[in-house]
Image 1 (spheres, helix red, strand yellow):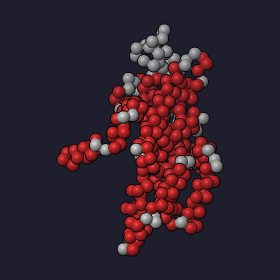
Image 2 (image 1 turned 60 degrees about the horizontal axis):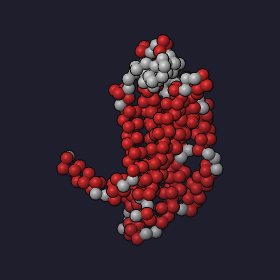
Image 3 (image 1 turned 30 degrees about the horizontal axis):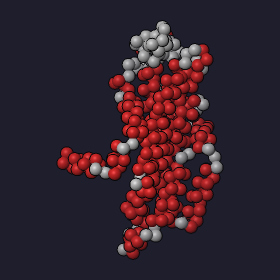
Length: 308
């Protein structure tokens, strides 16, 4: 196993992408920030000072405690507590897990759906192409947040009320995923229209290879470069969309709050002087989205042959 992995790391270290990464200070800083947030979210049960959602460990006497460096602060709560006595630092770590889960899952769903429809549309052409692209054009006329709100509202109306909290996370992932597939489909369709007329695709047809195999083995690997760039940038958009929906009260339930939910809860106390309840989750959200966007910008430039 080690003998197989070592050459892979050697090739990666000698690749143009790695050399481009080493020469970009912004990408390095963004990668470090992203990695810190990812590790903090993944290992929140281990590294978080408290479990903010364990009701047995909460005390109302600790409610509204300011950050440790403020007057009246406590070293046990570095970033302070909210109105229920939950540690803000721990809540941010746990909330980041939900935000990242929704972001990654919705981007994966959008990418699979968009790439599949884009391949079919570009390769089949004709009425199938026109039908898929007209649906994409109609969806592009509405902001993604409105599409997500519409789907979330329809799903909540169809589902039984006692199942809303249990299925809220899946509904949110589906709503955000559906709202973002168009960019993948349009990009992949354009690349597929170019690739399907090339010699290697014509040769595969002549020897009797089926359309599904041609799409999977020959065309798909050649159109994935732009898709990866879109996915990186779309991750930041998905996290922002989830935070917006949660801030509006239609996202994940309060029992498993994301960063958007924490900001919404703290917003009620912002003008009462308890600024830390919403400011620190907001800073974590901005840092995560900004770092992911910077990585996406670097990846787009690194994969652009015109800039090499």
